Amino acid sequence: MLARRVLVFGLLLGLLLLGLILGVGYGAVQVGALEVVRSILGLQENPIVTELRLPRVLAAMLVGAALGISGAAFQGLFRNPLADPYLMGAASGAALGVTLAVSLAGGLTGAFAQNAVFEFLPASATLAGFAGAVGAVLLVLLLSGGASRTGDLILAGVVVGSVLVSLSSYLMLQSADRVRAVLAFTLGNLAFVGWGGVLSLAVYLALALPVLLLLGRTLNALSLGEETARSLGLPLNALKLAIIGAVTLLTAAAVAQAGIIGFVGLVAPHILRRLLGGDYRWLLPASALGGAVMLVLADLAARVVIAPSELPIGIVTTLLGGPFFLYLLWRKRNVGG
Amino acid sequence: MLGVETSKPSAVSHQLSAEGVSFSYGKKMILENISLALKSGEWLALLGPNGSGKSTLLRLMAGLLVCNDGVVTLGDKWLHRPNGVKLRQSSHPGVSSWQRGQRIAFLPQNGGYPEDLSVEEVVTLGRTPHLGLLGRAGRGDLEAVEWAMEQTQVTEFRHRLLPTLSGGERQRVMLARALAGQPQFLLLDEPTNHLDLHHQAEFVCLLAGLRSQGIGVLTVLHDPNLALRADAVAFMHGGRIVAQGQPGQVLKRELLARVYGEMVDVKTVDGQPFVVLGLGGQRD
Image 1 (cartoon, chains in turn cyan, yellow):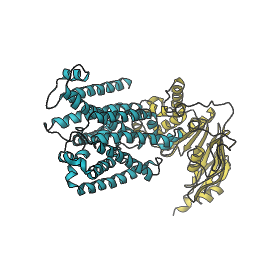
Image 2 (cartoon, rainbow over the protein chains, first blue to last red):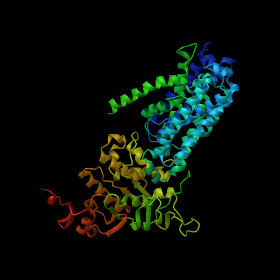
Image 3 (cartoon, each protein chain N blue to C red):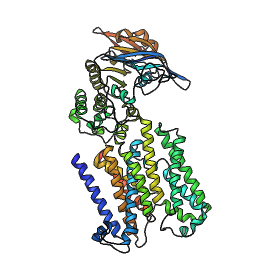
Image 4 (cartoon, rainbow over the protein chains, first blue to last red):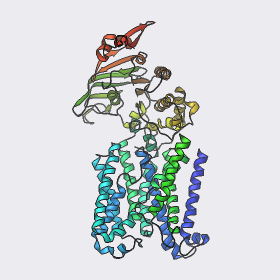
């Protein structure tokens, strides 16, 4: 098992490095692998690498890592293989935040509204997305009376999610000229993440990632059921709040920078669970790495498929992730059953 | 919260007891003024019809529910502080959740099981109260896991995943998980449910054997005949203990008929009482 774990982690790190070189190298101006490495190390000056592509690829890694580990943590917390990082309303909250920012702050919409893909997301929209995501999760916690009843959390998450989605749909209809901008955001896009976004993502990851990595044993114990986990002495309510808090920070930061990117948080932990088993002390870091790999490669695909134009990355992850997920389920039924 | 101070098991015998305990959900009274004591090396069975409060009492004794009235104590400490008593005013110190986990193991009826953990990984989770959130399993922990797997005879499939086991094997793994914490008290909610007759008998022998290890066992049971193997029986009805004592003395026809109806009878076979369903009179 240890050999297998080392192999999987080695493979993930290798793929991540490959993704970095390909992701930074590919584009309207192709940059060779050697030049990519030299530019990143600062041995050579190439503004295309350092100003445009590197922040984008790094953002893909950080967002992917945030979604991957969040998905794994929520699947463990809710003891549900279908749980994803958006289960508690973070995505719909962020969408509503951005919609509000875009439709209320008329001033920032000029160029913003006309291009589906824009250079950088205005800071106010990022902030509104983050606040929306955190606000939605807090609302869910409030409605379900804390974190003690997990079933209530899921129900409240679904209800709050639906209500927030219909609110933002209404707002979008009211300002039809800005629908495109909001839609571009909700479909997910890494094109508008600059160094500022990378820095902000890195800060949130540095805060929340260690918390989740320390909760591996808690999630393992939770796989025996909440009552048993409690009987093992774990202060479960506090630990559940810590998990929800860390996942919310990560998801809010990811959504605020890159929009709603589906399936990474669902599929990455699933694949790695097949390879590594259900021990969260390994599954959590592996899901972070796996999410990063998936998103870097998906972003590359988003840029390659209809080049020189590009697809929203949320569409790519869903188009690739959906069928792959079905394949996993089908294989499980036919091999495992 | 991260480090766990290990409570040393002392040579004196321990006691887990409820005194004058009442519990209600809202206005519905579930338990009323119950007193019960479980000593180390003793197997006590809770019997009674559905809804008589057996499982609730078990959870109170496990420290998973807090009673509205009365106290539950573990040795000379509160398991949980009774309502209305402030911690500082109380003459007894309380037990931390980690200490409770080290000393009392609990096995729920339908706890569910992880689908992608191996037998050994699941049993090792039973060491959680001793390891805390971050501690690494040391030699003592690994020895306890081996011991628990041997007691329950699951060592041979230690590397298999739980879904590949039969119901009886899985239940033994769950018992091994509970034993791995080397608890003083083992609380089980209908552990023989879903087991066939052979596995029921096997499981009961296993429980009986644990007494010699000094472990106090408290089980909720449905089948009075299995309870006949216990040291003592507490018979519950309507949230109260209506009879308590040696199984042969408690499980009399009058009591069973009063609670379960006239269809239940007690026969004596080879000097041992057996509870049987008297279906004869109902057939036409």
